[in-house]
Amino acid sequence: MGILQALSPKWESTQQTDRPLQVGDRVVVYGGYDFEPQWLSANPAGYPGEVIEFIPGQNEQPAAVVELDEELVLPNGAGAARHPVHGTFVVLELGHEGTDWATPTPRLHVELCEERPAAKRWRDRVRGAWVESHATYRRAP
Image 1 (cartoon, rainbow, N blue to C red):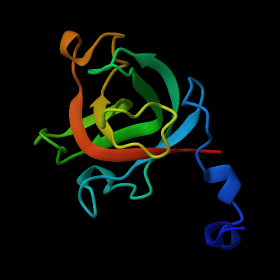
Image 2 (cartoon, rainbow, N blue to C red; image 1 turned 180 degrees about the horizontal axis):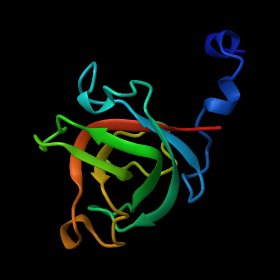
Image 3 (cartoon, rainbow, N blue to C red; image 1 turned 180 degrees about the vertical axis):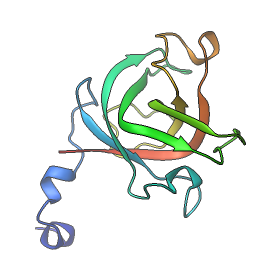
């Protein structure tokens, strides 16, 4: 048993699995480039939700659409958005070439959308607010 397993009785239920992320999986999206990312100010532990579909991504891999359990409101904006932004959907794009949805804790780009995004590439659909370039996710029990 590793040190983390000994310290955390929930070790097994909170770790990534070897299978790729799938529609219906519960996740928590968190993390960022900064030590205290602005987009996480309301909930530093991250935002839970459910993967509801995969849509064409900006690169070879598809993007995951997550419907958040609660609306995310960023009154001061985030990323390039310097105005209030809000939404209940986030689009997660893999941030490194060579990663896929089976990669444990991949670096993600996060786009916050007011409405469910169309199943089109970013450049071909209504865009949400870019809120983070160095997030990740974990599967939730």
